[in-house]
Image 1 (cartoon, rainbow, N blue to C red):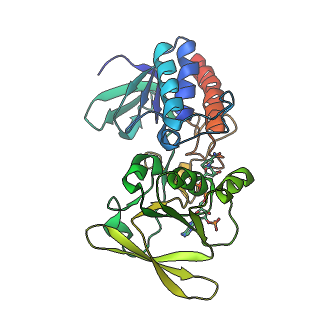
Image 2: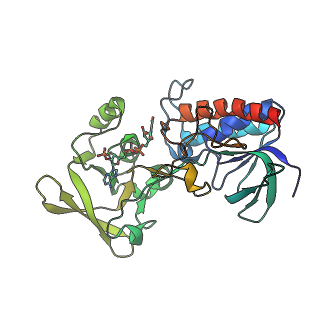
Image 3: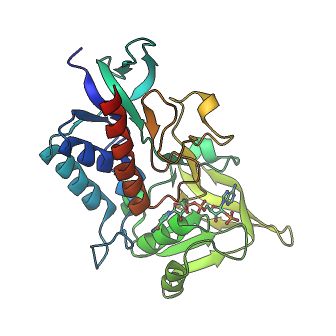
Length: 308
Ligand code: NAP
């Protein structure tokens, strides 16, 4: 176990990295614990068009990598490992936790910026073919479907934006949505209309994913007239919403869906436990907002550290 960190940040997405940038600049020691790679969901986005300053948009991985370098240049550090649980000494108020590989750390403050994970549908065949034709990351797996037929499930920004990306690779993209109106922003819906190889299956839900070693067919149901129909499909991308990554946090601090409840200053409690970004109740799930929340929280954390 090394020195006691001023701040340990669990989760290396935009909220965590922005907080680290601000905290490092105050001269406090700060380390980010991230189990996969810098950027979280944002790093898996092909083109982020609404982050100010990049007039042509920016690839999510590139933006995340720039943030990571900025954290490191300013004196923050990363450990690419998970944190599953933590304890706090009631007297010293110091947090202690172990990472997945068994390294032990202590910190005066814990900031939870663990983000979200894409939801699954819970239909027949989904678990069997997950990772074998069914996935949640077009930018990771899209290249496997060059010239093939894919289905994208969902009608939000993720589904439509990733369909645009997939339409440049696949021969055909079905967008399968349970209603006849999309919740994705108007701007994205307009771009979708221009793609000749995108076809909508509206008022439609998945009944079953079918295949052998890999998925090769989807069985759908039209929810208006209850007709069942099928399509030959080589790959499926699920964009049906996001679950918070908050198992580390006690249920008394979470809402029914598992999002973390925080006050206006991003405090979970009065004892040095903070949260910011997409894992929090009512977060807007925008990179710019996660960054703003991370920056805001750094000030509250500074006040807490000064009060010790
Ligand atoms: P989302 O906005 O929650 O949309 C999920 C979609 O999946 C909805 O269309 C929903 O249908 C559908 N759905 C949910 N459960 C379903 C089920 N069991 N069966 C079939 N369909 C189901 O999720 P998201 O697109 O991942 O976006 C999450 C958040 O990130 C949003 O706040 C979004 O604005 C934000 N985001 C922003 C950007 C951007 O700014 N560029 C990009 C990506 C994501 P209904 O519409 O009928 O509920």
